[in-house]
Figure 1 (cartoon, rainbow, N blue to C red):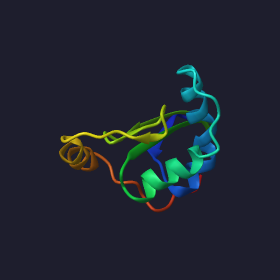
Figure 2: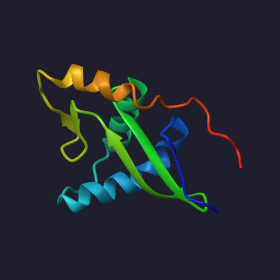
Figure 3: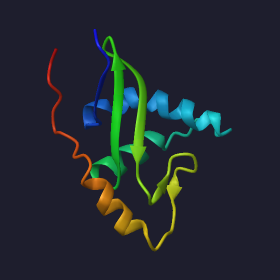
Figure 4: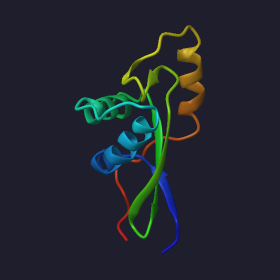
Length: 102
């Protein structure tokens, strides 16, 4: 099966969580029970654009673009340029509401 890279949808949140926690661990951050809700809030409120990579239907990587929040800190970042940057990011991808079945 080829590598697939698709926009993150609500169906991906649980599968994305262990990847995000491993990313946070790289930055010496312990598991955080708020991480799943944090991710859901960012995507559901369209404060982030994300993609999940799969190989043989198994999640192997991700990227999340959001200039106003920090995955490592699980907290907002205050910036005057944040709104303009997020607007430019949101034009590059719009998460789809459903995932095609294989």
